[in-house]
Image (cartoon, rainbow over all chains, first blue to last red; front, side, top):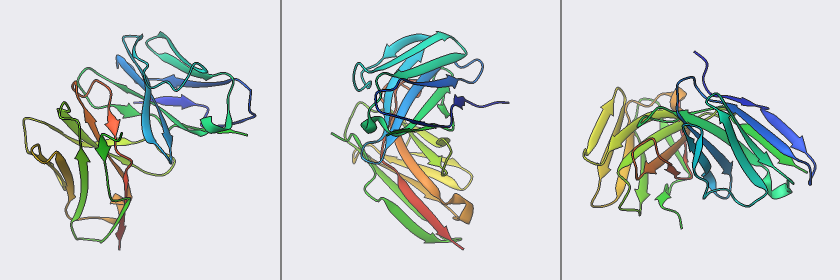
Length: 112
Length: 113
């Protein structure tokens, strides 16, 4: 039984480049969440989707960040252009209605 | 404005003893609380939760206590084991656990053999 799958696990890029993080939620889960973890701010919710529709994107830091969920089994978080302050671990999580969220292993992003 | 606070960045206990991790919150609209455990290089994993209509929930060695008047919850681990060494996050929701979670910054628990 596969959990939440994220790719890549590690990404190193240069400032100004586009970065795309990918997530495959657990089959059957209808909610998907993107989080960012930094030392300063801890775990922050960036955006969440319910039935593939973005419900709350108030946590997205700025217009450089965008997220899509084209179908129930795939979501992307894109940063364009990337900046060094975007360096963090990005987690994707999924859940059934009114159940706990299951997290993926995260993508460690380093922007040089 | 940190709505969920874990004031102890770290805690060290001896194997077999009780570990008590604390969490305070400020938003009175929070009605569901969860604890997650996180090992290095892994995502957080769900441990235990409690609804605001209860004041205690127990699952094996893990018990969560909720004091709504004090806006305080705690996680008790008895007995503590070396494998419990991890970062523990407290999280809260104001719309059921399907909605967005607000996390504390975590407490690193070290259980010494």
